[in-house]
Amino acid sequence: MKQHWTIKDESLKINQMPFYWRLNGSADVVSDILPRLPITVKKDKKFDYLRYEVSDQEWSVIDAAYKKNANIGFLNVESGQLDTYGSSVNNFFLDAVNRFSPRSIYEIGCGAGHSIQHLKQNGWEATGIDPSEYSLLWSKKLGFRLISDFFNKDLLKTSVDFIYCNDVFEHVLNVDIFSKEVFDSLEDGGVFCIATTNSTESIAVGDVSMLEHQHVNMFTELSIYQILTNAGFSSIEVNRGGYGNTFHVIAKKGRGSNDNTKESLQASATCPGFFERARQKITFFSNLYNHTSELHCYVPLRCMPYLASVGDYGDSYIYDSNVAWRGKYLDGYSKAIRSQADIITDPNAIFFIGSMTFFDAIQNTLMSKGILERNIYSVTKIHRLHDIDN
Image 1 (cartoon, rainbow, N blue to C red):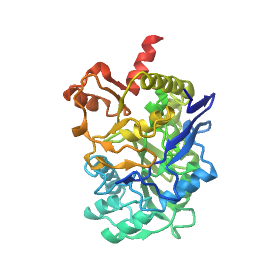
Image 2 (image 1 turned 45 degrees about the vertical axis):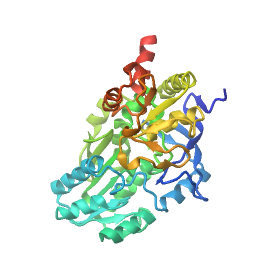
Image 3 (image 1 turned 135 degrees about the vertical axis):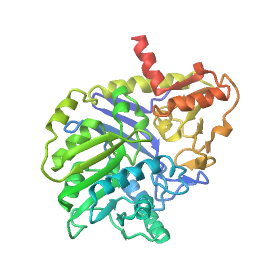
Image 4 (image 1 turned 180 degrees about the vertical axis):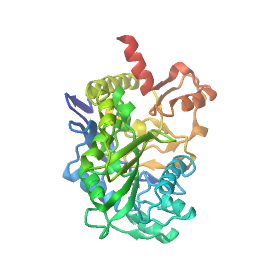
């Protein structure tokens, strides 16, 4: 059987993986946006995180998607996440604003503007920065101020005292330069507030489910401190988000030291050894896939890298707990997303759960439908089984 991936000492490549940037009512593709792209991941030796090595052609496709009416990664009424993930990040930003009482607030990558709307409902005005057609449409619907452009060091003509971003830090190609440009745009004492993905656990076990073309950065806790310290920030606080596997970060421009925190994290650097651990996980999944007549995969975005590693672009059924996704298609995958209501009742059905964070809840749901526990697999189980074998 053809191998669809390559792992070397410090790189991992999947030959073709669905490039999902929207939920669509059909499997139709957009003419100027390829539905599948290769993905190559390498280690950033300076900051202890993984990064997607994007070719010029791949970035042109990603850039084209950012400028269209995309909906993957944006919080909106159609996402089904406003009361879960959306509530968690919105309350984090509101708490930070209440804590620091800034005079001027900007959100980089504001998307549909629901964090801006949440601040407004609680007495604060913020301006959005986002170049997408999606943001332009929502700024008109909700009536918030929008700078329709990518953030850069010259965009804000005067210094400001509070800049925040949600689901942006992981999308930025040169995140160290981006952080320095935010630092330079802030007044002394200004605050940079970030909600971003937490890949620490995935990297530690060699889980490739975190791979996504738009997420060019996969952060560890140590890397957040090192990137922001390198940009000049001090008094950096990195906490776990209240929903999903996320970081909630606050960093200040001013006097302070992060040396003790960084030193305590140095021993827990997680990138060394990732690629060998990833080889083990992909090999295990390949064996499971090849010895199963029909595999059912739960949490589509997390399962896509594993399915792509075996060249599956629409052969397996995919499921998600978010009912708003039911019947929708992800670009590059030809089967529609199913919901909990569509779970088959055959106790011998084999399921693979792509999420470590929500594994227990999803497994309980499957078992309540009659699926046998021994037929439910996950990244966590693969990791445990490999440890037992050794």
